[in-house]
Length: 379
Image 1: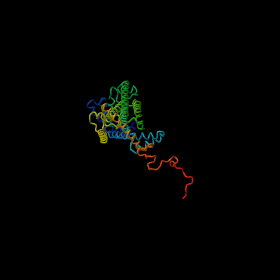
Image 2: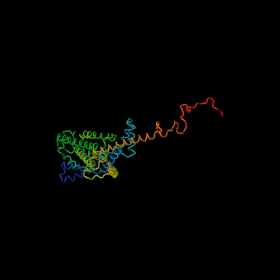
Image 3: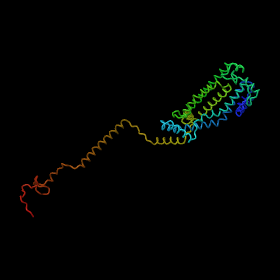
């Protein structure tokens, strides 16, 4: 035990020291051996750690935004290589590398908390086993053993034996009821946090590996906490429940005030700002709307006419069309040469002669009353 404690002293010593400092403050208010003093010390440890992790949380938000911006490209890759899953994964990884996006960034706060979680687990386990660790000396060890949270000792577990729980001054029923309630609350808060992220702050219409990962985490983490929670001391459950509630509240604040563009939360925020008259639209959207309004104003709408005017206008149009047709037909007739045109009576020569004064010819081309000579004279 001493070997393990010395091996991880680089992390257990700072965590135990922080708890002792908070306990010295709350002990003056609630009493040194009070469960409130020790419980609030653990809660304060969570708050301090999460404040230190705010820059990492901001980085997580930016990475999530980048993933959201890449959704159209991801969808195009899916459509292009939908029959080749291996090539699809390779192209996705290439896209992540080119844009500097990490699809696992949503897990960074949890990963960053892991050392503190492990250190707190070691500290509380040492208290339960009666071993001093880090800044927890013997007087503080005795005080921590007497601390109860809702009737359950700070270092008791769900799987603890009745004799060991009795040695800590409690009953196994109280321990299991308290730990079961805290495990359920811890799993439920984790599920709600992840579901809120999936339904409100991302675009669910695009199926990508990132979306599949988030959906998997939504179900895996609550189950994992429920299974592992039975082996956690009550103090560790207080720590993990507090950090889950912090994450849920922090995410609700971010989603409401600064949601991902294109998400359901973004549309809801736009509606709220529009209702309050505080919506500031981008300049390009304002210019586009102004152009549409100008075009709509310049367009002339036809005036509505009465039935009598519509009837008069229709009759005039019909008469004009008839007149145009008649005029066109007349022009066509005038332009066509007449085949049956007769000469006027006064133009015919008297005595049956033609207009040139020559005698009228017969069908054969001879003059009337003149015979063709049989042997024409040759010159």
